[in-house]
Length: 359
Image (cartoon, rainbow, N blue to C red):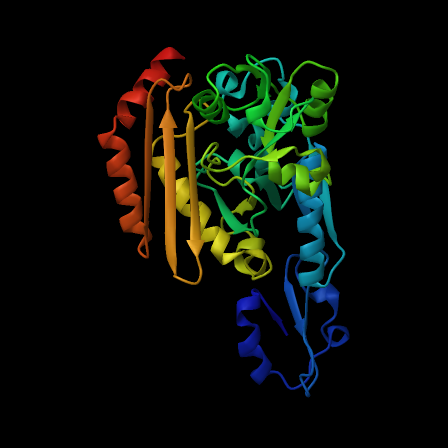
């Protein structure tokens, strides 16, 4: 027998006396059909996909490919199949390196080509760094899983200095984000913040060649690529609050696709991380966040107390105007409302308007 979804698996066990793949004959099954087979003793079950290779779309950067291959390994283990491949794609966000993301369309440039591959049937899922995913997805797409979060903090790598505090007066610091820029200026107004684009290896190379006194990157990417030894300081969230979704990996698929109808990707979802980052993205979406808006937002769920702590900062890029709010509680809707009310009362709308008008 064959079934369309793994969700029906347990119901089928009671109904099946004996069923083998050889008895069915693969030629009698349509492609993309989920096959279930077991014996009467039901000592084990196996899920596979008939004549189907799953393809993961990814950016070509070393970090992006690491993340895609990590998901590939998890899927192969969970689905008991090796027919899962990674398709590396170049995106406009990777190709345009002479201008800041805030001036060329934002981080959505990193995902559009991957979404196009899904629409054209070239791939079945896309793996992203969640902080690169726009807060509002096109109607045909959904985030099927959020994996366990890596360290969400920003990391400082210095040429000689061991931390931000020990940088010399007027030191040159490279970063690719307005969020980091305004928080660095609040902490050290004397620093010269210089735009820094490119993949992790390129950014570190520019530091080593003497273009900067220090650079600030996401700790998660450094750790995933085995570059943790380069980190001089894991920056306190009190100094540099992370971006929404920072440190988390997301799997995007088409709605109503074959992957939307089974449990493979759902099994990869990390519930705690999902709850945290969805609340962060809700705040960011409310504020119309993108690379053009200097916004930091971070949520942490306390499993012992069963409470959320939500923090958000929004500011002028030069740090001249700052709105900050922090609230905790067991009701995420209530926390969201309190944080937003506080930000708006401090002038968040005016900050957003001023930032947009300057662009």
